[in-house]
Length: 138
Image (cartoon, rainbow, N blue to C red):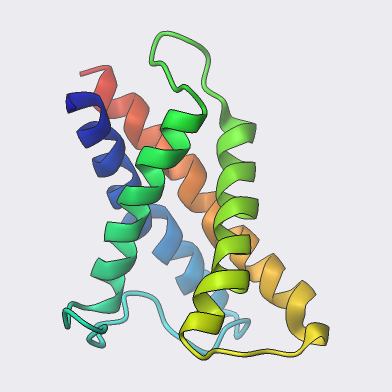
């Protein structure tokens, strides 16, 4: 249970320290129209969007680190973390979350949306590994 809790914390922290800053860079360069650390209330609990994203980052962190069979004593699976975040999270967002939220897009927008999602979520994956390593070596 302690292990999963630390996995959750690692994924949670990776959102404000890795995911959102990459989103901020993309926003600063005009790639995405929305700014990071969105404080708009989310449905149904009314928490700020960045906090909701952090919660889901924690849930995904537990899943990713469990699937990768992460162990602090072995070399870090940096590429696997990058690819898990970039591909798995982005695919779920585009194919499941966006349609559930009514956020449609045309097939011609898919490559661009996937690339943006890949960058942001790959940063989350690497950040999660960094936080997990830090939490488990203390």
